[in-house]
Length: 340
Image 1 (cartoon, one colour):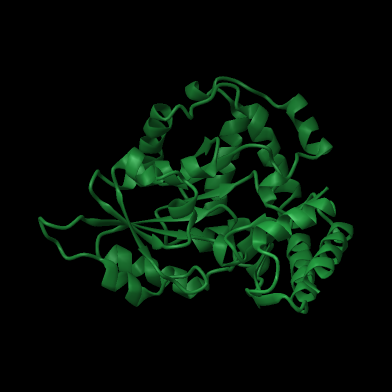
Image 2: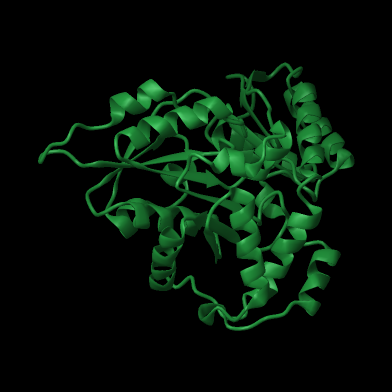
């Protein structure tokens, strides 16, 4: 099967798995796992932050950041299509007692005036606007890369109002490779940021959340509360270190394949709208007379190709290290067969 459902479908390479055999390990909760410590130090430096903590998932990174930055009843401002709104099980409400103020952005981006208008004036009757969250890249907008000036501008507006800022950097390294801008520069204006190793970087488990030393100390408390603390986590951290050494630059291959696929799919008769492609995500809508997204996904699966149906007419395709040009050809052939 050629699996384009998500870059979370990647499997660790043999070389990545072999790094585990030589990994030094210890009790992570006692700061005795040297491999985990090395990973956290490296990611903190990569993102230009004081400290970092290793976590099982990106969702836990977001939810811990929200918990640390807010108090119950506070409000989180974010773009409506972001991961926090759609894919975290109502975590901000369940874990932090925080409200979400979701704004309609463009390409997954918000502009400074939207943020300024959304910030509530001080009032005993209203929630406190406490945290701005952004997503880089913007997943459901087609993996779009925020313009750096715009990313800094919205953060500045939030900080002027006394708010904290957090970046969901699940695919931040895709933005780094696409733009040539360092991860530290992307994260500079944000109080906390994280990167995911289990997407395009190809590790089986793990994300690292970074921020100030004080932020990470508080993050550790919430990590413990949520059951996220581990023991010999160097087994996992070793694969994440391997990913940093070997799987970052190759993200450009995923971007090139996604652009090639988008160019071919955009010419099909039954494709109504194709979102611009910046990185490794291709999103398009189907014409009313075409099969529904779910029907198309089933048809393609019969052809040995797995895609994502995200709504009645919307399809998402994601490239990663386990699909290549041959896989792309199979995907495009299936699409041409069913969409003309």
